[in-house]
Image (cartoon, rainbow, N blue to C red; front, side):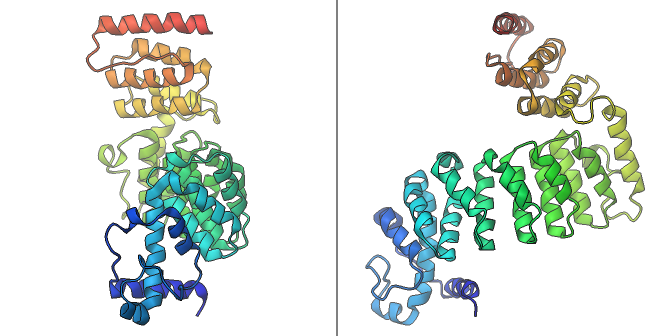
Length: 378
């Protein structure tokens, strides 16, 4: 039996044995002791008191208890958050054991507040180095953690791994590219949407929905409505709904018929809507122009306008502020005004906020102040 399979079997046996750990242990055991448990590659001959349930149980079930303790150590270190990071990184740097590396990565990927471990400095360096590790499991977990932390600087390295021979690596790359949020990832994800492995295709479609890019993505997702795989068709519709904020299943049930044998009406209906509203109206590679057009379109439903205007903050540049100001000035919908104000604030650095309770006079006053400050800043 391989070492990896042995660990899996041990974990399964532990669950069956229902071995428990004394309550409150996480508060009693320091990080250094938890690190020792994480680093151990075999059960200790003389377990410490906090680990030992009883001499008899240890003698009979020692190895199983040890596996459970490693799992519990992972949970406790993850709960410790940033306080455990220095010791974890030090362990990651010195260990040669792949199972220990994976344990550390599992801990980093399980922390409740990824913001505490911003991918700067040593954290980023350690994870990026592991992308070239010889062990596929280590690479897989390093990719997941980079995505979990939203490390945009990892984009170039992640894209290289998108052509890996391992389907598991390509799958994790697809998910991480969506989580990282670098809009350049759209091109790489569109390639993975056509991957030979179904699981990779599904993760790539989901990631496109998370990423939010519309201009080159929506037409490809429309094509997926003709897929032979019902899950791909459903994933494509859900991704478009995330990208555009458009309730396809509610507003156009005839487009969303995942079990229908004839899927041409769905593709034609969806394509017709997209072409009539947006395709050809903006340069084919200009996400900003597309989002501003959708946000300014008074005929479009409110949710689509709000979603598009919020996206402007991600894809926009300062030159978009004037367009946003015009939308704030002319829009009658308060949610649309608020969305335009959020993006204008993000791009200009000048705060303007539309509140539900704002009267028209109060809103005009805010617009006048913003215009004056923005003209002075340009």
